[in-house]
Length: 478
Image 1 (cartoon, rainbow, N blue to C red):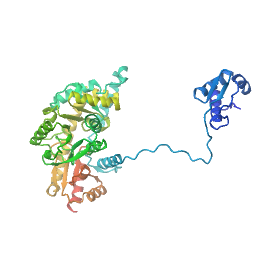
Image 2: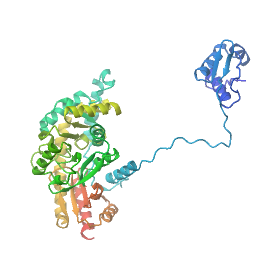
Image 3: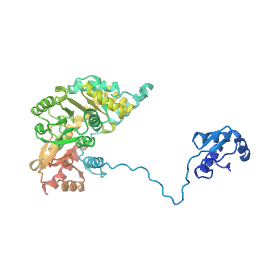
Image 4: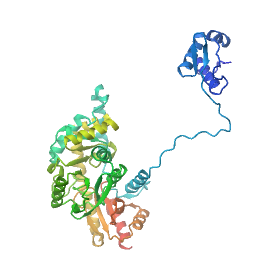
């Protein structure tokens, strides 16, 4: 018999429904059992008939009962076996083993060095830009104003290419700052370099295609391609950039960072650029040009892009992670219309579109001049920190024992050691001395080069001087 507990805060119909479901699922009311007519049960319990009717209707809608005019309401004829007290709960499906994923994620964590940082630690991170409260206030202002100005249409499903006003702002920026002149349907917005590379692998390459990457280089590039089952081939990097002669003859894509090589920091020489462009034309492969740190050059103007010279073969990647902040997760992929259309179709199928508020906020941030003011400010900060890093390395005589490269552009430089050098021990000793440095080996696929990638964007001049002096004590007395 069902009972009503007047002290129970739940509605009466909910109490009775829960009891009925319990009786059915435990076998107390076996399959086929006839339930009392609603009027009769209501009188026995002391509730209205409509309450019992609500309970019966809910049982029927959930499949616990069946009804007929002549047969009344009966428990469904399902083969239910009550659980034994000793029965071991069944396990759900096991997730598959993904060795490629486990390896990639492990390497990604090592590369980022994203372990818990000490309070007074000097972190020469090459991954993060300078941020301050002034940026935060401007971003917050853009967010609030963009929220106020947003209409309801903006909250519907969006364009897989990305928010059109933002693409127009990026189109204008590329034309004025990088000499890249494209139409808006040649621009696809993504949530970062890895997102862009994943879309490229899915859209423009067949599984098992050969892909050539810089080595040492950007680990996320070859990790993303390997995970998509591409045959990744390493190509050495020297003082002139990517060694084009080392590109595999069957390559369908070559990933390159010509403006400031991701690990070594060198600028790809003009002869190498022309060699790469001609090879891409002859062998008809894609060039993925990651315009890494091109906005921060300390001598002369930014170099011309590969895309502006060979747009039919090149996919150009622009990221706001270093220019503004990694947290906004916004970047752009530029290329031939047909290629970008293919990428947008995959994007529409797998991601649909990017979150709207981040796109609208960034649009406002650029339109109202915050972006260019931010860029002017951080360029001046980076110029001073770059000078402090260079001066400290020469003042401590580190440059006499180790090779310094990548000091013309970008937010990091490389202090390279001999291949036989004990890079791991020095990295550990430095951490014990309160300085975090980033081993070159973490950027290598097959490369045996050793050294440390030293970023200066988040470290002020005094800390740079102190950190390099501590590092010199370790390296020069080892």
